[in-house]
Image (tube, rainbow, N blue to C red; front, side):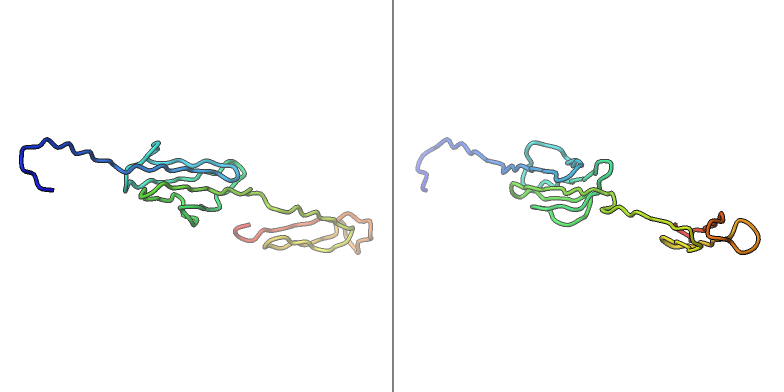
Length: 138
């Protein structure tokens, strides 16, 4: 373009802004910092996952992956992130049945001993005294 006389020009600049959509699978919440409706190009957002009682944070999917918590995302495009929470309870139930024997049962790490409550050789119906000691950490 060649300008041959005085002209008035108006420049319009447009800043790229993006959205960050956060979803949750399971039971928990995600905090965004900063927490805004839209973000300017290049803004770094920190996402912190907090599980509900009885749940554990499992990881991120979408535009953030992995298990790092908190995680960061650079806003250079519209982003979609899902936090996954899983039930923290054991996925099984164990039932125990005890018979009238001197057998010792140990679950985990430690020891157990069965001793007759009275003197002499115990009969099948004699009362028994049990003692147990847990190993360190149990």
